[in-house]
Image (tube, rainbow, N blue to C red; front, side, top):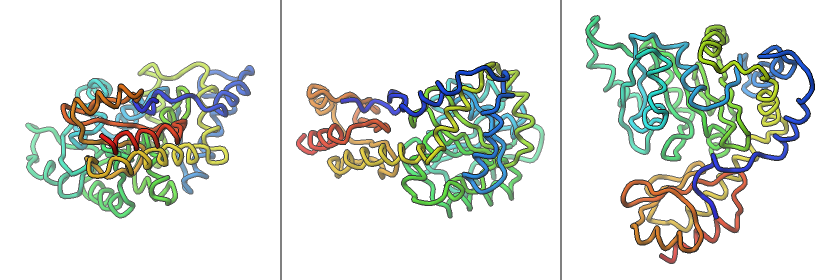
Length: 331
């Protein structure tokens, strides 16, 4: 009974079918008929003009989006727990040619206008200190928590007032939308670019960079080529993205994952370290308790010395989640 990560989930059958249907000769790189449909498909989803690029990893999606906003002498403000800081092996510095990450604080891995301002305000206006060029947040974030539309608007206003680009790491964006019950546009807020995650949500190897400022995409196309992410058979990535959007598969998958996480959270009770607002559950748990769960057949990651993380995927069985909830409740 596996709750290690949504990265370990199966590829959804409709994704395989879409890739098989795309297995016909077509133009190479991003000239194929499926890739040419992406802008319109995502524009319909968000209700505004979008320019969309596919890439094969979330790290590439985040970093290529940020390259359109940040110069090598600049910086990105992000939460101390942000994926670009803790889990991408310095890729941001690599792609941004040495630009820094400036780390902000905030409960449950959420930044606020005040915590971002606390990072920005001490920076002197001279060439001796790095200046922030962008703000990056994660929706849903690294603690499984979700920004509300009003919070996004406040952060977007701050970014605009400070002259910053606004990037959203949406590796679990679908889970955030499923939790909020709002439109995708409201869950994205005033972001300039969104890394629209699909791999954690049932895709095989396709992520979308959604530019709400289409002019940024023109630069990103060159950066994608230079970074080695312009795949020659891009139609297979486009096929996955389009299949995700068809009949809101992306949202149905996220709802299933969130439901399983909710079942686990119900059994965790006072052990919860953070509100459960997406598909991740963080619990206080001793080493002996974790060993007891593993002896019953549950797979999950330790989270520091006294905690565990359980992540539900689109394919997590409800009975497995229920059994885990019961097992946690009887520890």
